[in-house]
Image (cartoon, rainbow, N blue to C red; front, side, top):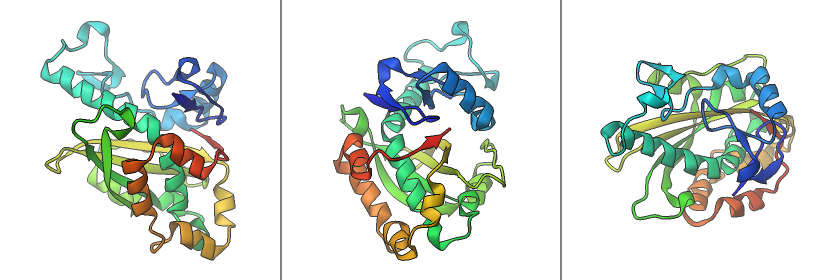
Length: 242
């Protein structure tokens, strides 16, 4: 599996990557990039991964002695988190691209990246062995981030009102009965944001406007394509930092 350093955008095999030991979500090519990312912004949004959070304090990493025994209810909950994390790691680069152009930045004020974000609702697919097909996206939309925060008061999200290159998307995982089980927030700085603001307004609306069909495209891509195929469709020109 090929991963992306979310600070310098270098792509490299999984065996060579470094991962944030708290959230387990952000990957880096080197200790230097990891340190720079932490100082730049990641420390403000990093949340201890649910599979590592201590039962007495979710903001602290659990000790080895406190790890739940296999097949207990607590252990099964950790497996849910790990499964979702694997799937999100595979699709994150593709979701970041959709999260950027679905904001239709050329046709909105610069603070659009502060006030709105992409929201995905996903649910498990049964009898799937492929890690990339473990979940399906059943809804994709652009929402006000304040609405996400109001519905999830415990959501930790640092928003710098002066940072107009920082984008975000939210993933809500629900079970097959439609009950929300997990919420994940992704934030990153994208150096190409200004190019989306300055692109032709009609072109911007065509790929990310309300009548562009971007949400149907995203849902179909996750259903039928591989992450590598979707990344190839977009090209590898993304430059971002977490």
